[in-house]
Amino acid sequence: MKRIAVLTSGGDAPGMNAAIRAVVRCAAYHDIKCLGVAQGYEGLIDGIFRKIEVRDVGSIIQRGGTVLRTSRSERFLTEEGRKKARQQCDDRNIDGLIVIGGDGSFRGAWELQKMGLPVVGIPATIDNDVNGTDMTIGFDTALNTALDAVRRLRDTAHSHDKLFIVEVMGRHCGFIALQTAVAGGAEFAVLPEIPFDIGALCKKLKASRLSGKNYSLIILAEGVMSGYELQKKLAEQAPGYKATVTVLGHIQRGGAPSSYDATIATRMGAYAVNCLLEGKHGVMTGLVNGHMTPVPLPNTWEVKKRLNPELLELVKELSI
Image (cartoon, rainbow, N blue to C red; front, side, top):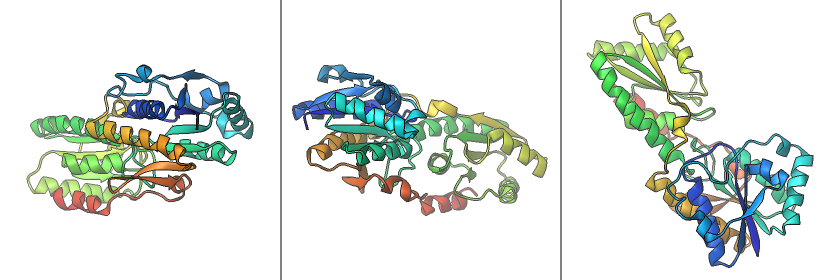
């Protein structure tokens, strides 16, 4: 293992730069040359490589986003695109590739692994929906960003006796919505994993009002519907409840990583390099019960990561 490459793919997540820094510095420690690939798999296909030295990654640990930039590549979904990407690595004598991203990025990494290129994945997505790891890079920061907004909105909701719908990210999973609801004391969480019941929501809101609570917060994962769609449904089913919608959007992706994200990103970056050195490839760097563990890449998407049932029950029990 003399020369490796690293890329970031898919949506950006706070802590990606900390992972890049760890990869570069751990590689240098073991006398391995490191190349950075710009713009994810698109850059891999087009051969946009640059050498990254130890000093090049100084002071990026606290920066959000990714200095390598990222993209979603339609071309890489084709056999021709993957063959071209593989050839670009061969032309530069790349012995191993580290892919920082989510399960979609890992599917691409697995295709390269099957073509003979040793690959290790690092899970980085604010959705926390990658199976085989307790936490993904970026989730903790995004959660705290959402929670900060919810706490501010609660002040206004209380002052004006308002009902707020807060739309958070989560196309196919409700990890951000669920944990924001628990930590923010919301009355209801609308999640992709749970069939939506407008009747149950209206019943909960009515019960809260009868108990003397004149304001409420609903946390909505974007994958279920938009906040404005839910606002319309409430107006139709419960005319007495006029909701105000706040869409947090992409602010959840930006900003400096939390202490937790910077730490696990650093651990995962170094562990990825060591996996390549030890001949462990076709794997993801999983964090399981506090320990770094190699997880076969197919496991990251073949098994769906489930929400914590205890947290689901807590939302019901405590929002009285």
